[in-house]
Image (cartoon, rainbow, N blue to C red; front, side, top):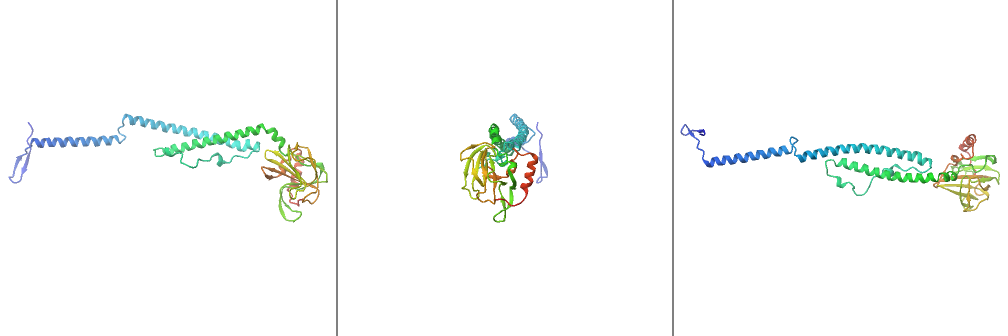
Length: 325
């Protein structure tokens, strides 16, 4: 039998029993069910959105994410190793191989240039680890490009190696006039006093003073591209194209011993010292060009000079005296 509950009635100053009807009982039961359902639902949502409880699918996804993070860490270490190896190959390529074969080094910006234009990584945006994924994708793309550039460079080096013997024969590497035939090494490469204007100007070659008619020798194998007097100031002069970007020039000749288009070898007599053109006396003005840029011929006399002879001509060439042309 259920307990009877009472309430105090202030009007009658007495306790009166609480009468609970069936309707009230049903209403209270329905409210209890609704409250219980609401509490259970809210508790379930809280649990589902917390780390206290995970569904099997969430546990599986969490494990997959942890595995992906581990794989990315491993990939990052491997990328660093590959980047180190590629950087080492690039350094050796620029500072050893290309220097040895006298090829211009590949600029850093060309090796590691990014990819401009459209956003290549737009599809990777919007995820929790987008920055990590995009950075890894960029590194892979750059490594891929570096590998292609390096592969082409090595192909070029291979071609240069195959032509090394030809290159050695072609490089202008002897003095164009024999030491015993020289009156003196008149002027070197650098700033000198112009004999006509008496002003200081850059002298792009070397002047070898010798008697008129002294033989002039080709300093490397090549093809005679010019043998004429149609270049201002040089008078009768010869230009030999040695290939590989090298050209040698011989000016102020008295006469030629070769003609345009003729193949010559190092040591062949190509002409004779004279005093033609803009010249202060019999001498040979000699220049070397590499890729159309005039360079110091003194760096190429290793073919027929002893160490003592080279040191002597080095001292003379550094004197800032008056040139002969």
